[in-house]
Length: 535
Image (cartoon, rainbow, N blue to C red; front, top):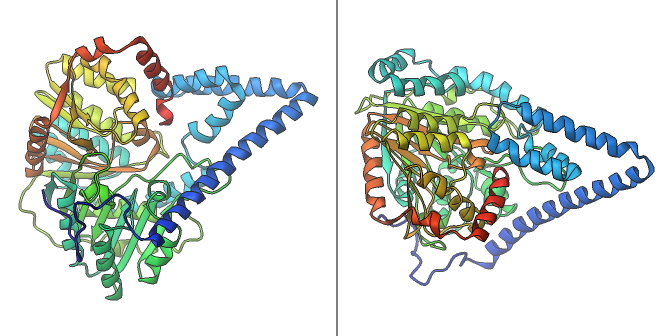
């Protein structure tokens, strides 16, 4: 394991989480206070709507009838949707039991289509950006003829997310997020044109200091440096003054979907992507954010297991497009790009290996669940084994069935989950899925040294994925995500080797788990499962 890269003195063994100066603590507290204020303001608005409803209902009896009819219409609408029953049932139960609350929550959180305005912004931008990527039909046909099953997977991603497959790209896999971050820092020093960074969470602390220094120096050299982060993902780490601090150093900075004290139908959709692009020639992605716990500077949940990828070559264009999509979509008053072609232009490169690489993105603003379908297709195409690692296991009936059917077909199906959870309630929900999978042949392993945050799978020594997509409803249905599908390249073997080593540090969950569960525990897990789509 490689230690994090630092320009100054590294913290000693006594270093504690959030052990920074008072100024930083104040900034973080201000960011959290704003979020708390926004949440309280929204709750107050909900209470006021309730009060207003009951006042009106007491005077006009027909209002209650209207709400009841609206609830019936929404229930029928949900029932008729082409959507998994795992998503439908909680809403149907909630609206039937509490019509007013259920209708309101569904309109705010359940539709999961953002506002019409946001949907239109993304659709219009994708019409400009995605056609700038090469079709690469000859590459697709090559993989289809070589491996029809996996070729169909590549074709699906191309057809339904718009991202092509490449074979002129080298991929390097990092079995430890700290190694990926170190390599990223070194590569950033070579930037000449632009640096694009998009992360769910950024912490202005020890690990960020050398990164900040490099970005500052590159901005001073005239490099176009952009930093983009999700408001909710980062609110426990940085405050509102972070943007001003970055822009004072010449670093363009934007925040995705800030929480405001008004009802927001887009609030449930967060940016969970993790991307760095340097000059359009080198890109990094994977599971890690830019915060101390990801690089072992602090260890609040034991040893943190995370992974990443370095891409060099043609496929980096797709990472560039994915970054530009969110950067240019979030606000009307931003000064957006006008010359996209210059940012996605060809960079001459000859790869050392000829494997097939396909970076792709998933959006909650359409009806296509690309991230989930990629995982399901890996299971359906597996012949010998399919191994997964995820921080959370909260899956639909369709995905559960895919795991079970693969196992029943004789495929060695394994899932690694955390031994030390970061969220106890979510971990309890994760465990509620164990029994149904275990009794049908799926093997589950808990990573005993700590928390596993990696999101990846490998199958049959030929295909693997690595990226930001967890096996949970948030990643599969609510968040903006990205991943990389790989076939017949060295990184696939390296990912298998990482799994083999990780299994030695895990405790396998056996059938005894199902027997040991008490009735009370089962009841709690059943209740939690009802609210799984909201977690």
